[in-house]
Amino acid sequence: MKKLGMIIFITLPALFAGNVHNAEVQIQNWTCGYGGLCRRFCFDQEYIVAHHGCPRRYRCCAVRF
Image (cartoon, rainbow, N blue to C red; front, top):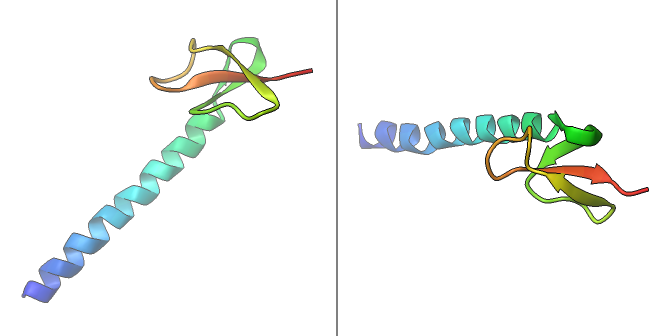
């Protein structure tokens, strides 16, 4: 019985961790003002436009030309 509990204890967080990553990938594909994308951190070739249109702790990143 303890082994069964341990297996459940280990597998449940692994299942939820996969869903969190999937949600983060979907958020990164959200568009925001000026044709930017929502990301936690902007890449080197991008700059921060604003935080508008993105969920909390995400910023709107647009490509530099």
